[in-house]
Image 1 (cartoon, rainbow, N blue to C red):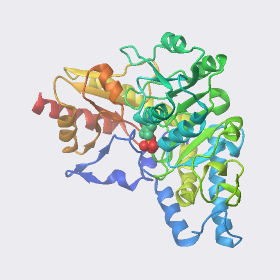
Image 2 (image 1 turned 90 degrees about the vertical axis):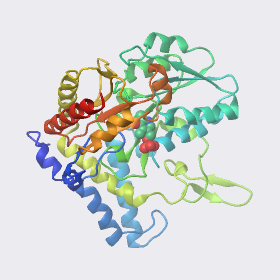
Image 3 (image 1 turned 120 degrees about the vertical axis):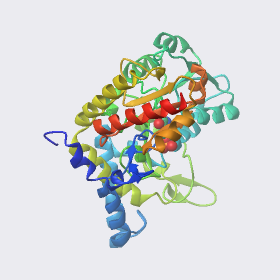
Length: 407
Ligand SMILES: *Cc1c(COP(=O)(O)O)cnc(C)c1O
């Protein structure tokens, strides 16, 4: 671990951070959509393609063995990163979205018409639409927990939604719009007291805080590699072994079978039962270097650094007349959604980009949340380990100029 948080040293690992946009030094503040990738991950991908590439789990030959070892080493690294009990509980997916679809489809196959699942109004579309698809197939009922004006979940309402028909609760650990960090451990504990299993969408938590499966005790947890300094196209589904063993496969094909005849097929053991087809083994292997990056700095250090950026930027933003922040929860992660006066978020985003500042604008895949606030969208700033106070200052200066022009 680093003794002192040396952000300039961290930035050296990210060549993209020294590029320009619109003739200005680029300020990348869209980490909630995807983080940048450290050089060591990119180099690992190149090294594999030029040195080791071979299909996993199929061959006796040396390359296949090496490649399989690298993939399985990442699985063990992830297991340790999230403190899962065993590697059988770590399934590689295409990302958070596929993880939730897998659970809704496979675990959801046990649900019957009239069964109820509990979601929240702050969910990403990835934790809404898969359940709606299941509803269309089975007739389950979706119940939705509201928030207060600070963007905190109404926990009394959450508890009150549980009844004899409740079969599942599914909610985010951290809101990708509001930054709210939900009290997931308490929420899981309550659901379990009613014998209801829980899925947690950890896409915005896994890059910013330790997530401990033994401590949270959820039944399923999903996240994406590309938001946590890893390659695109892969993600992780954690599931408790007892559920994964009971669940039917999600997709069928190679890698996930025991023995196949036209009459009958048996399935592979966990975790392979849920990994049909050739996995994205190069990116999975390279994700290992992204985890190394986080662990070398230390997650606690990253969290402190990002909190500093959050507090500093929010304070400066509040000095801008007419600026409103959406999401002011007591426990908040390094995401700031805001609007200024009647200025359309898209116009603000465009003028920020003209000054080299990359932010996200729009509904952030959370249209029901936008409806809840009665707004079309927001501008969103989201930080990562490599952002600096100077970049926060550049954002504020650019924002003031944009507001002067548009306001
Ligand atoms: C990004 C995100 C997702 C979707 O992740 P993908 O990588 O696109 O599958 C789901 N939920 C939250 C909270 C997110 O931030």
